Structures are given as structure tokens and as C-alpha cells.
Image: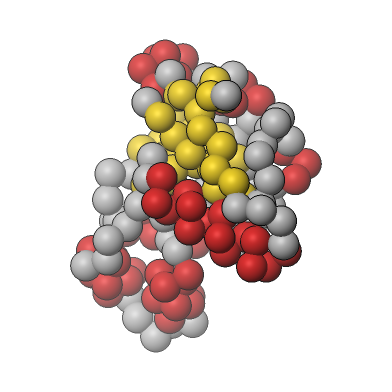
Length: 157
């Protein structure tokens, strides 16, 4: 399976020290199966910090990873997915907030974050949050939590 990482530099080596905390699935390395989304991420990163738009491609051995690692897969937005994302984005929760090697599921992009904030602030219920997300065209993200998970990726030159 082909996956993509959009950034302002080509990723020569995955460095977990450069990963940011409080993201959808936690602090780790994120990819997508949607090259257009990866290009958009690269564009946005360059706007924020400069550099050149780059998309690094990987081959992911999903079947082998599925059989050997602890994985969590969210096929679509759900109450469980929303609660999982909220837990990982919550700065008051002990991190890492889970022990999965790989997590796969919808991306809570900037437009989705507004709905998450409404839920977090108590203005909408978890069911309303999920309902709002069902009508968005969401990309899938692949989260790699540790070096063991990354060993199932092969960078394509």
C-alpha cells in the first residue's frame, strides 16, 4: 500500500523527536493514502515555517503489520473515534494516551477542529459531533507510534 507524508523537507529518516504532541492519534509519524491531501499538508507547512513543498512516499506492508502489531482502525467517524481523538488532543491526559503501534482513521482537519471545540466546550453532544463529521469528505491518516511500527514502512526513492 502506498502512503504519503507532506512536509517542507524530504523525510530522509523518521525522527520521533520531531513529532508534535496532542495530535489526533498522539505523538508520532503521520501519513495518508491521499496524495492530494499530502500535497496540501506540504503547502500549509511551508506557509507556516518556510521551505519547499515535498511529499515523501512510502510502501506500507499493511498485512504483515496487521498480523504482528497492535493496531486500531476507525473506518469512519464514530463516537469512539471522536472520543479517541479528543483524548489524544487533551493536554490534561497522561501521554501517550494509548498503547497502539499503528492507528488508522479519518483526519480531523482544521475545519473539523471547530466542531471538536464545540463538543469540548459543551455546546454539542458527541452524537452531534459525529453527525457533523459524517457529511465531510475526510481523508484517512495512518499513525505510526514507534520505531517498531515504522519498520513496516519502506521509503520509495
